[in-house]
Length: 212
Image 1: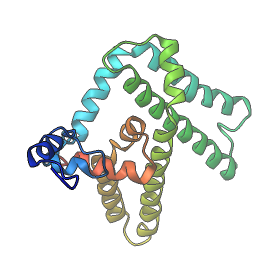
Image 2: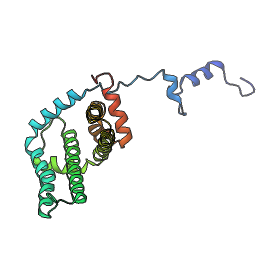
Image 3: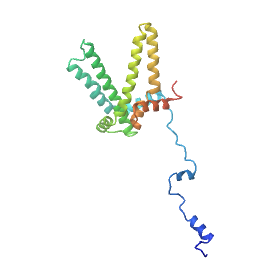
């Protein structure tokens, strides 16, 4: 037409030839709501212990080697330096801390190696090396759990000045509650590379509704 205006049919064809996915930010909103991703199914501490036993049976050889390296090796070093049966309270405290750290590292490495292998059976070397490399998030989460148990022990000592029976009953209940609610924190930290507090929140969400 005169004046440089295009016919209406030509403009309609031009509009219809545009790409269906607009090249601007927020274009995905025009496609309707996104599907809701389902989170992982809840897990109870009983289920976790059952799966741990199954994993132990499947990977008995590398788990035993890890235990010999970390826990038994730590006891051997403490024995050689004379700290295993020392009467000094400071030395006893340091030895107990070393044993606890070795056990925590062992548990974190086993969790990491199990998740690394999945349903496959790894060779002992791959299991041990991979587990130790990926154990750091689980180690930090386990240390936080150990600190919680340490606070429970302090509370038991303080309450024991009033009543030993009440202190023991409350400490057992508190320790059981920590295990029931937050036991999956270590494998959750390893699997999703979470920080310690995020792993505790994740574990609480996984066990919600299946704690008793």
